[in-house]
Length: 413
Image 1 (cartoon, rainbow, N blue to C red):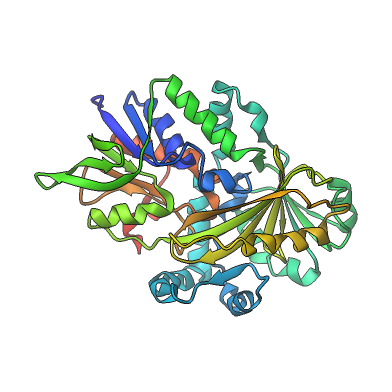
Image 2 (image 1 turned 90 degrees about the vertical axis):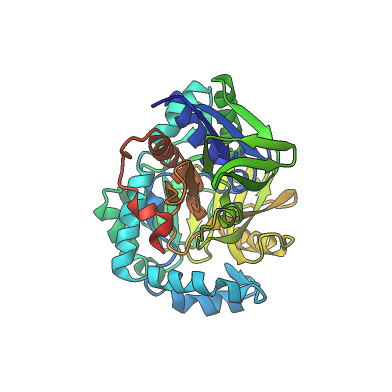
């Protein structure tokens, strides 16, 4: 491939992983973002890495739970009804994506995307002296009743069919594994080969420093528009000036939709706002991420404290945060942890870039040879970014992608 320049819009985990992989193709890469690397959703997630995240959000029967979640002010889901009309096309595809045969197709695609995750992170982390941020202690799911456990049979069958190893744990085994937890869990599932990062923001910002040490350039600027020359996209207009590009990779998360609109492209992408509470000195520690299935929230011991992450809020991308959505996690956590001290905590909100089928967009534009897309990872950006970056570098280089990327096409909807 002739060496050329590639501009990546977005300095989150997907943008930085794409930039690193592109450098290995001998390409000159510039990353542009209004934020520092590793902010937005790359900062506030629960840090889960691995292939267990191949299960989509829309599953058979999930629609029956939605009314109860919405009506419960402490539930895991809320929708701003002023925004609901815009959601209709997205919701239509969300419902269709929950059919059993479609779920299997989605799980197959996500499994291939997520399986190399930890290996790729470990490779780059070793180059950046960040190995201490990657842990491989598994991923624990907990259930308060047999009924709750049995309701996830289909998800367990999907994981088992794709070679994802897990163990079913009894009450006593859960207690032995995580002594900080209360005893009220009937069953657990330990997904054995998954891992997590104890500081997502530090991991991404450290990888961004590696990118710069290798000759990459990061510009802190707000991309406002894509400009054309002779009918082809050629320039980015930003808050600090105009930038010419030869190839453009759009990794702008929930903000990608606005950029695609300027290119005459449509995408079903919503800003699914997620919240977290991070408690400094909580008095408890866990060895791996724990997903409390009944309450739909996650807990991970991070470098800065215990992070509680979860809830989904569908709202306008630019609406102010409602931190009550974060605070509802505190009473839930007090029920599941022993000797829990929540006096000192911080709050965060980020807009997950969510598609209705839980699969990202990873493809080349059909309209413009110089435009590439990598966004829409929803809840699984940390897990999906490493392989996404590799696939983007292969597309830009004109190589055959390492896995089948047709499920991730922009044009599938």
